[in-house]
Image (cartoon, one colour):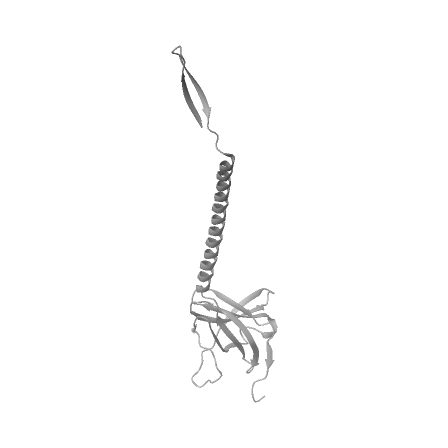
Length: 201
């Protein structure tokens, strides 16, 4: 810091001198160290705040994702029964899980048959699931089917395929297509379809 000192001479002429008060070295060092420490503290707080904000965002995103209805099918077994010369019955045994925080409903269940027609084109035929009859005790699932949050249901779906619509020898792919209440289609391919004879044969 600079100070102006006035000197009065005998001649009556005044003169001025400048003096400097120097800050002690230890005090300057202390101030400098405090500034650096404050800067590091501010940086650490900003880093912690950023990490906390990102963690809160991930938690909020995870909670939002869990609220989205979702279905997870699991194939237990699938068989094809040749009832007679006019039709086959395909039964699918499966479980359906809903891991989300919201309930969901299966609004449609279709068997998609990809088969070759006469001009060698591959076309897809959708067969709707059969309706459970009053005297059927085979644990047949009824569509629409509601599945609560974090719940699992299991049972059978049955499909009747007329031979006049599709020849089994020309089918290249069997796929179960489940449509939920949100309009999302959940596919489940039947890689192994066992052929069995009807009871009494």
